[in-house]
Image 1: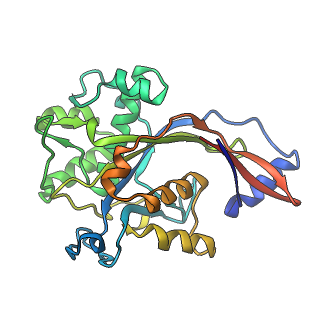
Image 2: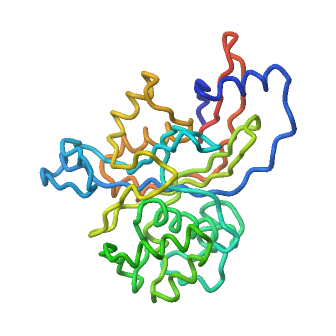
Length: 292
């Protein structure tokens, strides 16, 4: 276990008020899931491919991760760089959810939670990646993945999920698809500190970009979405030019250290909840986390 302190950044005023005793009762955190969608940078194999539809960052030699910068009007973490993800929907725990790969009871053991929550979290992770960047971790069978999502019908499906007109289980059943839980790996769990008025108990996952699929920026929650060089993002964070929350910092560092995208996804991380605390260091508030 390692203790690490993070500067509160934009959360500084709230953290200072909390330390000063001007606090209210912490709100109950809402369950959420987020996914580190990764691929090997094109500089690694010399392929020169550009699967992003954007600038491509063709000279990235390590692992790239798909990230979004939340719009300034978001109530939680505005202008912050995040992975695709969001809150669990009650319908994510659907017992008729078409499923392939490790079963919910196996995920429950991995993540240290009960089976229904494990099912809902994995479903939420896959659903959110599809809603926010158009990548679908599902296929016609337990060994295949939908390879081409360019048909406008898929945009209609995403919109119906976002508007709550359909559940993810309903989408998969109608399309004859199964959720590929084997494409995900658990990467940790973080709980928003007590001082935040909006709190989340977030489970982190990692997944490889499926062959043939291209993530996009078609989401109203972000003003920028693309493949990201972790070294460049961490440098921008250190210079105060990019806003990252502590769990994102730790996760992006893990991407930077990975020898390959496949190695990152294959290495599961403990799901012990990290619950940061506000402490005073040299007269300044800091966010302290006990990392597993």
